[in-house]
Image (cartoon, rainbow, N blue to C red; front, side, top):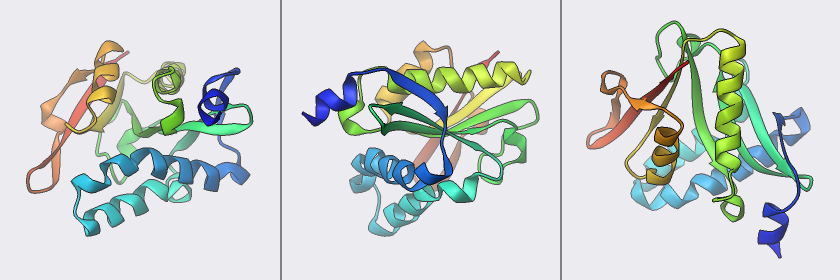
Length: 174
């Protein structure tokens, strides 16, 4: 029954309310936990801490959520001016997207695409020229969606947070 509740009913895309931050944080961690085994325990602990720090990102970002039947089923961190962030390092003229997350039971039903479309809409509304994001080889389903949406690889913005762990850059020109 959880699957039906997660995937039926209208999907509302909006800014997270302050009282929803803990729910969104927990959902994001659940969505990313499938990657825990690909990291060392210390690496996962550090990544999990970053994922769940939604409050720490709010000064320079917007937390956009997808709500269905009164529950948060997806979220994404949107940086209207990504050149101002400490993490991503995009140049001027870029907005940024991080930590696109969909509750496992809601995956495969267009939630991620709707969240990305909202980030693109907000970028266009602000006159931003590019939307940038980073992803990894492990996130093949997400990469496929980004590419279908028009994002292209830009290896000059790739980075390696640890030896052998490539984080690939993509951008969409608006």
